[in-house]
Every structure is written in C-alpha cells, then in structure tokens.
Length: 216
Image (cartoon, rainbow, N blue to C red):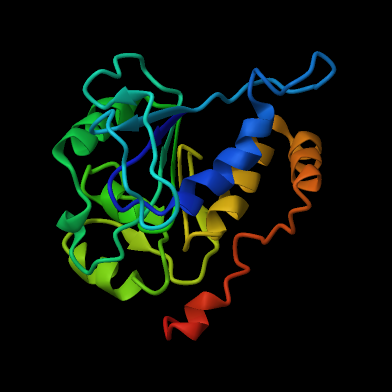
C-alpha cells in the first residue's frame, strides 16, 4: 500500500487507517490468522527530507514519488492543507504518481480532502464520491465542471466496482478502512481488528456532519 504524504497533510487521515489495516501486515499477522491478504505500507513523498504535517511530528518517507517504480495494489491519499485553494497542497510529482499508478492499482482510498486531490487526476470522473463536510461546498463548486457525483450524506462511499473508496472528514477514514478491510478479508478479520483497537464502527450513511454543515 502506498501512503501519499505531502507538506500540510493531516496525520490522522492516514495514521488511523494505517493503524487498522496495519494489523494485517506481514509483520503482525500470525500463521494462525485466517486472511487472504497482507497489507504493508510504503510511505511516499516529494522528498526524503522531513515533511511538516498540519499538526504533529515531522514525517519521513520511504521513497519519493519519482523513485517509486513498483505498481502498488492500494493507494491511500490523505487530506490536508485546510485551504480553499486546492493548489495549496497539490504537487506535480504527487499528481504524476497518481495518474501513473491509479489506473492499474487494485484499490484507491482517499480520506477527507484527499478526494479533492483525486478529482484532479480524472480517476473520479463518472464516479460517486464524498469528502470533508466543512469543505464540501468549496470542493463541489471547484469541481462543478467534472462528471463527479458528490454525496453529501455519507461517512464513506465506494464506487460500484469497489476500486475507489472516499471518506468524509478525518476520523471517517477509520470507518472507511474498516469497510474496506471487511470487503477484502471478510467480516470476521475486520471485526477482530476493530475489536483489538476498541473501535466503534460507523456505517456508510451514519453521517451527522452533513446536517451540521447545512448540506441536507
């Protein structure tokens, strides 16, 4: 799994899902664990120098976007920036990576405003998606000329082919990660992982923030 980092990223956007999905990594799964996959994270960024996120400690990537040559099965795009201008956190190397890797990736997961980044690649064209509810109107207006159906009330949304998964703001990434894990491993392993984290799971439509932000 490629985890996309950049200056101003929201650490919880990726760390929450990684915490859950990482319980199924090759280093943590035991021989007795009955799963049909292992999820190992590789952290990518524009540079190998320390990255300053929106909050929290500086981040270090494993590879740069340009140096990542292998095809990743899963791509995870966190949100960040908290700006009304998308170009405040778009980077050419990140966009080139997504356009290069996205078509052949098995799954693409975006958290919060990560779907705003994804919208600029063309990968969301003709698809349903959701995003952070505080930024929802800004993002919908910015992408009004794109064939994307933005779902206002949704904790997370998966496309019909289950390739692209988008979530609402920040902590909704955990609910997306759970739903995704249940899809690829089955209910038992997903429940076991959530139980280990003492996680209360919210369903796809369990989204009170749409109403709180005047979207419905």
